[in-house]
Amino acid sequence: MDDLFSVIFEHLPNPSLVVAQDRRIIFANRAARVAFASVLIGKDLALTFRHPDVLNAVDRSITEGMAEIGEFAIPGPLAQVYELHTVPISELPVGGKIRGCILLSLHDKTKAARSEEMRADFVANASHELRSPLSAILGFIETLQGPASDDESARFRFLAIMGREAERMNRLIDDLLHLSRVEIDEHVRPRGMVDLVACIGTVFDLLEPRARSKSMTLDLITREPVKRINGDSDQLIQVFRNLIENAIHYGAENTPVKVTIESRVDRPNAPENGIAVHVTDQGDGIAGQHIPRLTERFYRIDNARTRHLTKAPVSTGLGLAIVKHIINRHRGRLKIESELGTGSTFSVFLPVD
Ligand SMILES: Nc1ncnc2c1ncn2[C@@H]1O[C@H](COP(=O)(O)OP(=O)(O)O)[C@@H](O)[C@H]1O
Ligand SMILES: [Mg+2]
Image (cartoon, rainbow, N blue to C red; front, side, top):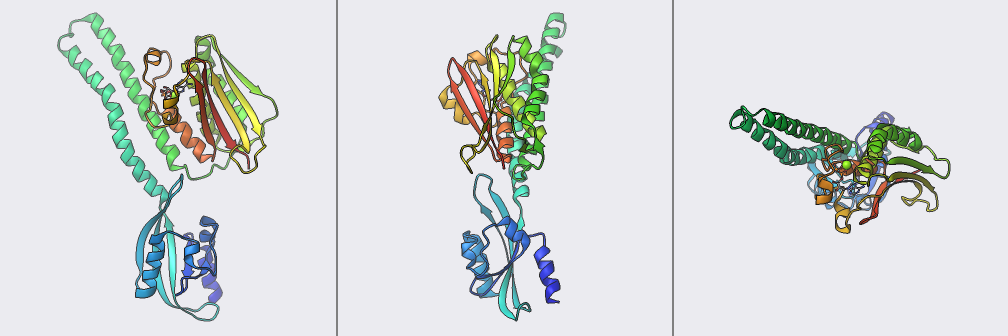
């Protein structure tokens, strides 16, 4: 019997620990050891979980003999949220009898918490951003129904504008949905193997016509063979597509967009221990004060220079936010360097395991 229960406990999907009266950890199942690599068996629970909410719940269960339910978050760039349950067990018939211990089981609620947060953000941002094209469309409908109802040329003009505004709403909705899907998966490491040169080739094929329309070339520069890396190739294609699309959009006519792939193996364990992809354009560049904010959702630099660039796809201000979240999921890093009047380089660093 003992063995049966230990085997079951070991394989329970939720991280579960048994804690003694003096708060030492007696057992931790596999899920707990995987989720918290530093579980210290035989040591005070506080050495594994510093979080006061966990320790207080366990302490109360020990002194009062009552079950508790609570929630706690482990802060970090990708905060994790857990629900915790403590259950006092009067006697544990394992390995001799252990009296009065606490079963602490945890339930990872990160995904649920994240989607709740995103749902709230989505509603606020989307309604704000969708309102302006919608107001424009409603305004033109009113004009076409009233003062301009017999005006043939106004009808053509207004319908064209209404079409563009509707397209903008469509693009916004696509990008918002895309962003939220990326965010939901952000704390799950991608499992595929990716050939970066092939990804960039796919993006070049897609964007070549747009580059040609501005007499720009797309140049790929690799100095050494590029290792395949761990990642999600659809998402990485999305990253390079957004960066190269921006480089074409904001780069000057008759200039090249250069994509350089570099293997950087010089610093073990640092983010630089991997591959770097630099996307360089020769455009107007970006003023320093904007750079840290570019990856925020909906952040756009609205200046006279960029407002007239209407050839490119509708700007939503979500492209770099999507890029950032995908790179986070790959445990990589985005670096933006730019000089006004010269151009910009967006560098993606991806780890190689
Ligand atoms: N290569 C670039 N050169 C100059 N400005 C850029 C470049 N890439 C991005 N930006 C600026 O960053 C903002 C955010 O970019 P992004 O998130 O892709 O949104 P979008 O392209 O939809 O406007 C852009 O509006 C633009 O002002
Ligand atoms: Mg963009």
